[in-house]
Image (cartoon, rainbow, N blue to C red; front, side):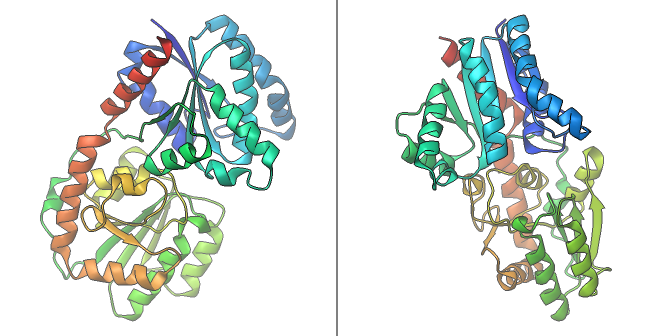
Length: 361
């Protein structure tokens, strides 16, 4: 059995890459290949400053020791196009290349390659060489594929979208909810301004002024949580907004099952797991048309696209669906079928199995 070493954060960390790694380890891919994990980065660690310095200095040597000891045929680098992740993972990539390993270089979002080093021609040249050094560069969707092809047409690129484990089908959502029942909105994700969370609160204010009775559940944490809570209090929306913190497992499923709509007007994104989860739970999304999201969701079929940084447009979209509960249910049905057909863990395992086999030929 061939061995693959996957690089990424702690499997217990709260991150999209950790979710991705856990899915691969739980999939049938682990029956076809001997999958190993090497932890990089600070996510999932509780470190002091001296411990961080020690890791920074000695982790590449620990990686070298693991490569020599376990002798994987493939090193699967999971990275993002942000400066911290890119430069850190470049060191591990160099070590793996030095030992002649096959490289899967998977990019989980971040800046486009053209913009990543747009102010430095030398750094852009280096990035092209880094990407060319991989046996295959794995991307999440068509938008990413277009950007990387334009950046360097000679790259060996593959599109392997994210996937999820399907939970129980909330079939009760096939029946439209009664108009006298308050619409249940949900936001699941990082509490950061760039995710559009403040626009959600402003949209809720607009709807409240229109006399609309709606409830918003916010699940997650992040750097702007204190500001967000303060804004909710300033607007007097404490009874309409519930903060749940980070949710996992049954609690996370409950959020989706109890919600009518997923509100996610993010400024930039790759392919968020929260969108896949909401669609699988028959919870249509109000989401920005950014990144690789249009690969998954069709406007008016699985949810609605909303304008960036526009609380008024977001409020109007929510208001429209509040008045058309049957449309919510139809989009929920289409969403569920979309995920069942194209975004399951079995499909993910098959895609990576074929990719690994191809570069080993």
